Amino acid sequence: MRKAQAAIQSRIEYWQQSALVRRLQSADLINRGILFAAVLLLCFVPFLLVLESLSGRNQAAGLIMRFGLTPEATHAVRQALTAPSTTSAAIDGLSWVFLIVGGIAAAAAIQELYEQVFEVEGRGFRDTPWRVAWLAFAVGTSLLTTWVQPWFSRVGGASLVALAALIGATAFWWFSMWLLLKGKEGWRDLFPSALATGICWVVMEIVFRLTLSSTIVTNYKKYGSIGVVFAIMSLLIAIGVVIMLGALLGIVWRERYRPSAQLAELAQYHLAAWPSPLPRTRPTLPTPTSSSGPRRSTSSGMAVCYSIR
Image (cartoon, rainbow, N blue to C red; front, side, top):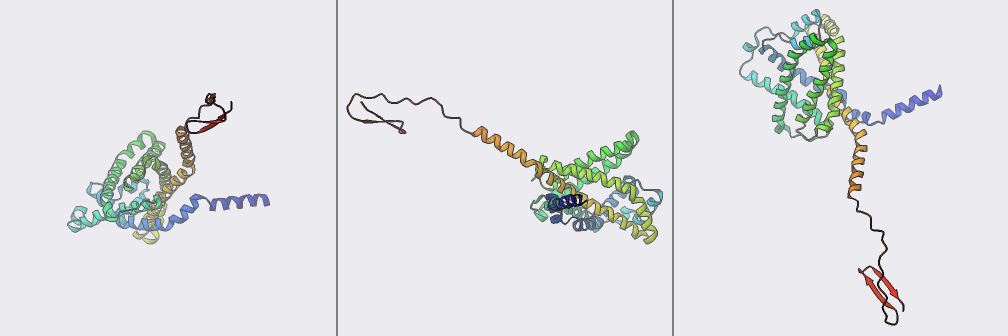
């Protein structure tokens, strides 16, 4: 029993001193996830809702379809998020400017997360073109996902949807990391983080597909429409945690397994650059002279020999 306790204690101490735990502590994962969720709720969620309404779809249709909400949860979401008037009539002039700025602010929040995790220096307002490009890419990907997901569900069921979601999420975050980091990290270096983010993203979607409907219904019955916002806030916090955790897992994996490859490449380089060994032939001594007395002879300024008659 004591041996088992000692083994468990040693594993816990090893885990506390691991690179992943140190990075998680330095990244302040939960607090930054909450701040990130607040930015998404205030800026990105209204941006997506307005885009969905302008495209002719019911508001929050993407959220309802992606997480498979029950009819009761769907009703609660529509009651909380549906506008009382037509969106195109309610938004004009300066409202459009604030709407676009809100979308760019969400892109800036994701960019700051990646800059902190990958230790890349940002340029503030000068990074706006990169953020606008990512925002356009995210909107296009969202529309494509909304169009493709029902087809995958009809053809292959939940297994094909999960596989497509893993591939799509990995590709999306792989390109997002490269774009928001302005190409300062290579594709190969970013792939472990993108794969880890894709896996965490799919797991998050599965968990929320199983729990989000009941959470929305319960909160709606207790608190009304604001309860739906509480449930969506938990989803947004999970998104922020997934983004940071996936990037950190990829970096830790790269730091653990990449040094051996670097040492092998370094050793191969030094072996290739090592000079060829000197010839093992015995140097030729100078021919003795007939003059009397010891006489010194020099060969190539290096060898000195004496010949005695």
